[in-house]
Image (tube, rainbow, N blue to C red; front, side):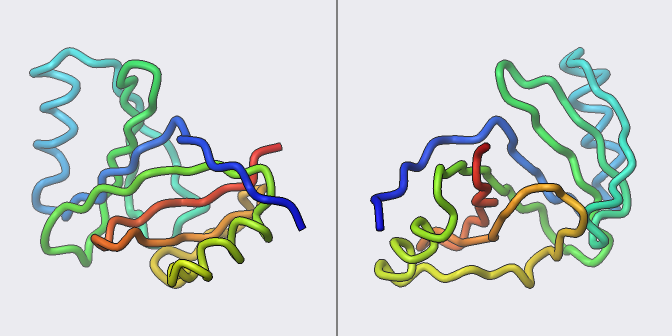
Length: 127
């Protein structure tokens, strides 16, 4: 059993309540002038709409989540060994919380985890 390596992913997701969504998209597109593109969101059934924003070397995903009352920020981590990474995190008291947003047909092995402050991270096995 090896020691897993963790690296930062290139995606950040901002989960936004329906009432604030259009204004938030307009802020990044119209006010800041960033490149914003709308996408289908078939992998995440809790996401009603999604837009990507070129945010330097990362992609900021603006996800409309209709049952949210306040925005939330989610980050992405990569690991070279998801099983070893899951065990290492469990030893530190961090367990998968895949129920936060079930994913389907992603084509990769993933788990959702939360840091001690409650910030959600998508832990994805890098190929």
